[in-house]
Length: 113
Length: 113
Image: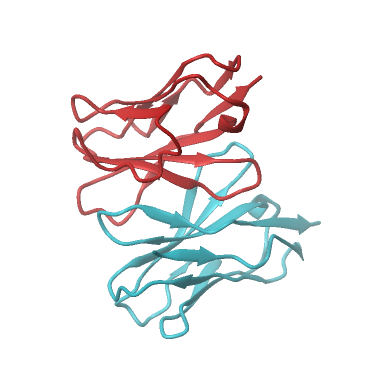
């Protein structure tokens, strides 16, 4: 069964600095998707960034980028120029199409002004 | 609708009471997922529908949990004889058939007292 592990329960960063959240996963599949979701106190899961496993190029969305290491099964999220609005729970997730999303346990990110 | 809608947003139930949680997916989305999220944890998969067919119910924790989607649109998650350990946020998500993104509702927070 697929598993997703986030080893950092909490992280904090100064406003405007850069922070990296870690994620590792386990799968025997070769075709899958990886996601980072943000969950603010409103509980709404918001997609931050998506990576297709067949793509070697790391995904980037504005201040958010990933470091996808397929052989190592590692998928970290880098947030540049951190803003107060980035404070939230961040979840790494694995998805084999037409199957269930598998989430990690989450990392609580605090932004210090 | 514009997004996934869940109702009620909050539900307080007395132990032993039956509850029904509703999910209205995005129009045209054939895939629908239910997740259970305990406080401070990542979402845990409960069940998955494609149209009206329940393709995976492996995550339902006991036979007190039942989900249906009779017309392939709105889904209801029913919990019978609620217990305190059922207290959690229940998240619903939907996607198109071969989609690469699941869209989440804001969840229903269930508190069993």
